[in-house]
Length: 418
View 1 (cartoon, rainbow, N blue to C red):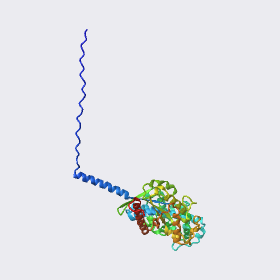
View 2: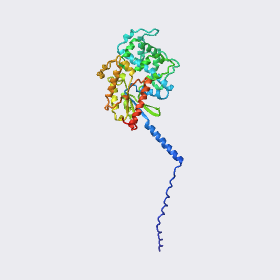
View 3: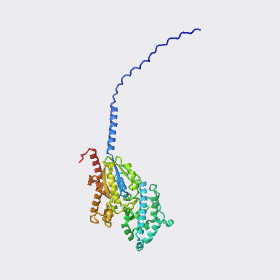
View 4: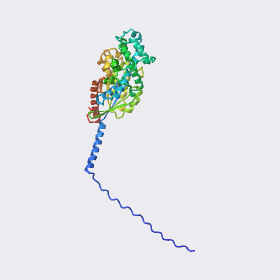
């Protein structure tokens, strides 16, 4: 059996190389496209400039120094009006604040041993009970919690404030208690003994401004009551989170941050330190004879000085304008009439005359200046303020804004360094 011959393999042919691509022809943009691109670039540049011009303000200071009041003043001066829902929330808070103040001063009256003295205070004309009877009733409901709630008067029908979920359960309960007890509280507040207790209030850290509420209980208890601007400014709500609001003033956007000042809240401050243009440090002049709510042995002014020292010498604020607001000058002026600065252990070196407002203010200004490692702290960065006075705060905040903007421009190189 023979075999057939094999066929010869065909020679290999490489595939043809692809034709080289022709060079792309440059397409010139149309005038319309050029205009659109230029417009986009212009908008981006404008947005970048606005971002650079935006001023981030941070309010720092110890608890109850007045930071949140300054924050509220900014809204009054430059923000939107408050809604009815806001007003009702503040109505509940105001009434609750009265109960808080009364709870503290009633307990203090007992601590001072003035109950017997109170029993000798006369019953006001037309009053349903004596100051001592009013005190006993109030104590049974707000401190000892053994009073007969069924016997208390019911809240008036058609009360405009009503309840507010935003104010919280505790504040709403206290507001209801206020409506039931405001008449006995008025009798007690107007007694001679209570005036003595009030003069010694620094031991129990009552909010000084709440005297205005206690002097106006009839208005606050009215079914038609709507909180005034001053009521809102005086209202005390503990700040437990970082709060921010934006304002546009003379074409410049401002972001203001309010943070809690109590020791437990300060760990949250670090989250706000980035890209801060200015710090407004708030310290209450009137707290030279008070102690911290969270640390009874620590003087509040000493705490403010230590805190100011740590803020001013913090690297995060090396290129940041720091303003010092020595707040509550009105309460300070009243308090030094009966509380001697030099009588406080921490300030025994005060050599100025007692009851002298200017000497006292200058003394504390120097105390804050002594906290600085760098001596370069311009006096124009220090303001003596009353945060509840809108006219005073309008002037202070306007001048502060000018200083901050000028300082920012100088540090950016747009102005001379002098």
